[in-house]
Length: 112
Length: 112
Image (spheres, rainbow over the protein chains, first blue to last red):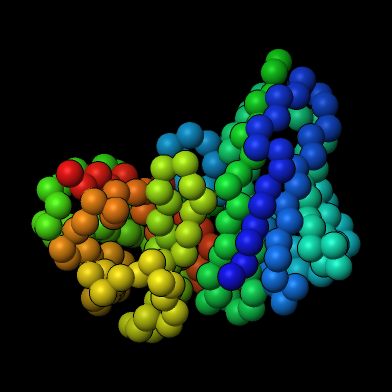
């Protein structure tokens, strides 16, 4: 059974800071790794995803994957108050039909 | 971005009654999912559905649960009869067959 864990549970950063969120997984056969952002009472919204080891950057967001370490991360450059939300990491084993395994989330607060 | 709608947003019912949760997926999507989140816990996969069939279900998808999408209308999750432990937020998701699953805002179900 896939175990997905996120750290930290919560994080408070000042506006403009770099934010780093972490996710570890247990199934080495995992092939798809994603980050979702969820504002309170709203739908989880896909932010970024990655398949292979390395980094991928989109705007202020960078996802980094190290399969050997069973770890991936999300880095937010120049954090904004609008980035305040619950961040969920998700992992999937195989095909597009495969179930997503979610972490419990990191609650991020960016203070102006 | 693509939007998934869920109706109703909240539902309160008595234990033993039947409930139907409705999901309006993204219009051209082909794959549909239900996830369950109990208060304070991680979101967990229930079932996925493609071409009119359940493709995969988890152990959380009890015999009292059923899903269908008649004639391209709502994708529904029916629970009959409900139990106290069914109280949770139920998230619907859909995907085109690519990797990103798009989520709705959830239906908050309370079974009394």
